[in-house]
Length: 125
Image 1: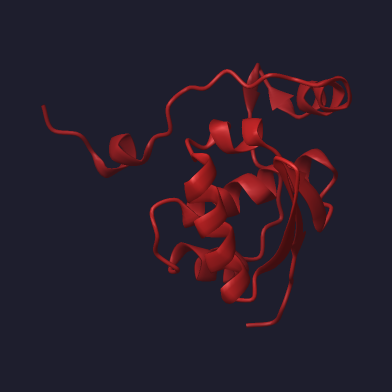
Image 2 (image 1 turned 30 degrees about the horizontal axis):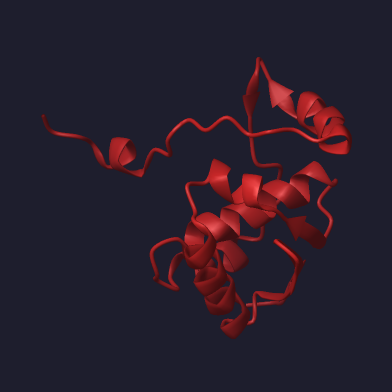
């Protein structure tokens, strides 16, 4: 069977556990039961992330903006395991991807327990 490029890029459906304060935001940020990534996302930022390479760097960049959208486009977010699960990213891949994004000047991050505190760096291209 031949798959189109879109089929090859499609992420698997993942059930994401909800926490009390995220529940309300997720419920208000759905359209007919589906989820989405809230914009705007700077084209230069996401374009640079897309060209960094690495298995899951772009997925982690999208996860960061997904969480940012849950918090009304906050530049400072807490990236948790279940956010990364939604984008099919494992723990070690996430750390390497975050390192690539930091080296490219797109984010700063610190690890606090099992969570990552991420700050999105906006810059003119």
